[in-house]
Image (tube, rainbow, N blue to C red; front, side, top):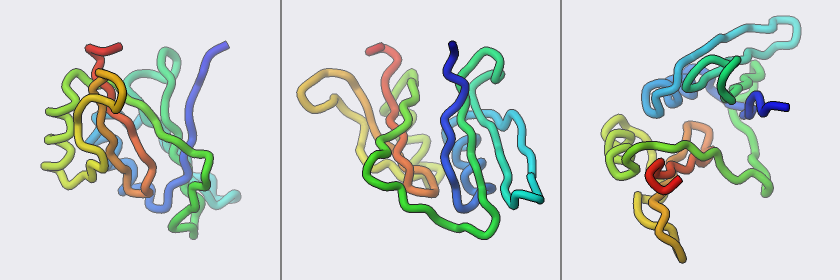
Length: 129
């Protein structure tokens, strides 16, 4: 078995693709419209779908926002330097909602950023992995 992807519903696909590619360095792997179903799927990641788990963004046409509910937590991404990554994200207009620093009751360096739909992304230091 293999974990293939995580799916998020997004209100503005272009803004979301720009966030994940320009601010988080993912690559748009493929994108397809489904006119009969009135939705578009976009798959993004840090390498091919054959070798990596990727992120699927689903845009349902005519829907501009979603309620996340109480069960959603976050996506975690490992980065070389959490402090530098946060500065780069902020300089490009991204929202850092928890500044880089050690976690409470631990020493792992982390931060949280927010995508255009308000989904939280945890940045974790690869040095602590």
